[in-house]
Length: 203
Image (cartoon, rainbow, N blue to C red; front, side, top):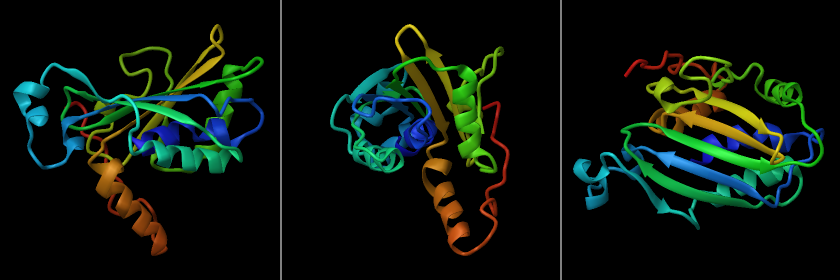
C-alpha cells in the first residue's frame, strides 16, 4: 500500500509549480487476500472473503508513516496522510486511490508533465491515463505477475482536488520483485534483470 501511494503521489509533492496542501492527503487502499499473509484466519477464509469490500483498518494503518516520511522528504514540509484500508474480493493486487487538494488553477497538461518528468526512463512505472477503453486508469488486473506500478490521475476542478491512482501486484512489485529491483541497483546491474516480464493479462 505504501509503494502504490508514494509512486502515485510523488510527482505532486516533488514540484513547486502546483501548490498542493500537504496537511490533508487522503489515501483509500484496497488490497487482495494475499496481502493478509500466509496465516489462515476467519477473515481470510474464501467463503468469508468472497464478495466483500471490508474496511479493516479505517484509521491508524502502520503504512501511513512510510507514506508521510517519503512525501515530506519530497515536499520539504511535513505531510499528513489519512489512510484507510479495505480488504476486497481479489487474490492479488493493490489499488490506492489518493486525494490531494490544491490552490488556484491546475491544467491537465501541467500535471501530465510533472508525472512524465519524474518517471521518464523509469522502466517499471507506467503512466496510464487513456480517454477510452475498460482500463483508462490504473487497475491491478493488468499488472498481475509483473513488477510494474501503473499510476494515473484525474483533476476535479470543482473540488480543487487531484485524484492520483496507483496499482501493483502485491506479490511482485509489492514484495519480491521490488527487492530484486533494489538488489540489481545495489549491485550495479540493469534494474530490469530477472524482472522484465509482461503482466499475466487476461487473468
